[in-house]
Image 1 (cartoon, rainbow, N blue to C red):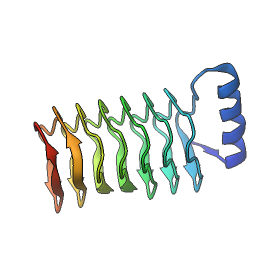
Image 2: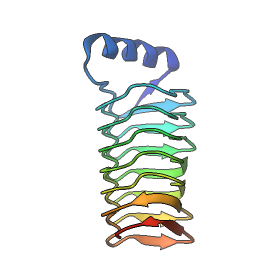
Image 3: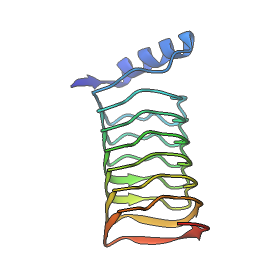
Length: 162
């Protein structure tokens, strides 16, 4: 797995902005990076590891994080609309005020994740395992919780349809 330093990321990010092509960084290791407010639309981070990464207010619309491992990171007020988070392992992650409308989390494992005040319209949590995960004050319509397994979780939202 290729480790991505702040310098390497900045170089690849600048090139992506110049060419207009989305970032292609699958199977990489991101550690202790501050990537707040970055425009990462349609980026490919499939199979990557994110540890202690700040993605607050980042535009991650359409991002591919399938099979990623995300721990001790933040996505506060991030846009994850249509994000592919299928099969991700998420531990100690904050999605406070994030937009996850139309996101796919099928088969993911969530441990101590926080979805406070999120947008979860048409979000797919099918077959997700949740432990100590909380969804509070989120907007949910047509949110799919089929076959979700929960342990010590709390869901208290503006639920229009589950």
